[in-house]
Image 1 (cartoon, rainbow, N blue to C red):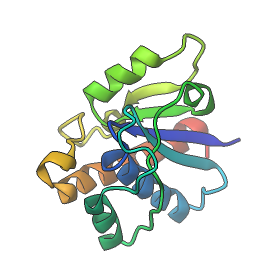
Image 2 (tube, rainbow, N blue to C red):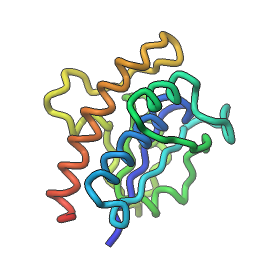
Image 3 (cartoon, rainbow, N blue to C red):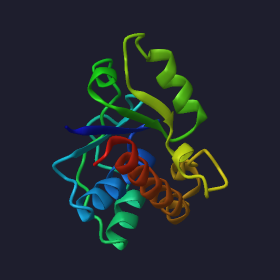
Image 4 (tube, rainbow, N blue to C red):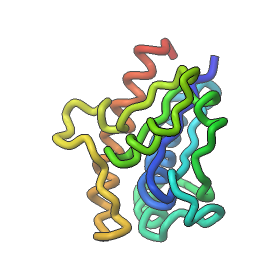
Amino acid sequence: MTVRVLFVCLGNICRSPMAEGVFQHLVDEAGLSDTVFVDSAGTGNWHVGERAHRGTRNILTKHGIAYDGRARQLTTRDFGQFDYILAMDDSNLSDIRRRLPRDSNAVVKRFLDFADDVPTRNVPDPYYDGRFEHVYELVHAGAQALLDHIREKEGV
């Protein structure tokens, strides 16, 4: 059994690749790389094919996390391929839900809905304010809470 997780933000260059990198790092540390598949996408297509934002790459490197993914856009196929489709904020969640096919069994939520101890449900976009360290702190807390949830709920 493989649990498939997709993180989604607007352009797939800041928040969702950061979540992908952090979550993959935690999955690897837990020895679950063969059980949990991780990816990210954007609701928009502006950055398709581009590397993650320099701020995201720098903060991941600072925390010892390797990431070399390229931006891609959310597709209809993703709804049938992923078990968890996690939005970085309310706006992305609305976009995802508008595209959600009726026959999808994916859990579609805000990423931080899994992190009860985090006082916000939205991961702010550091593209506009440069607060990549703050976003990393939120993402790390969310990733740990999500991994705990998946281990308990999915029995991995």
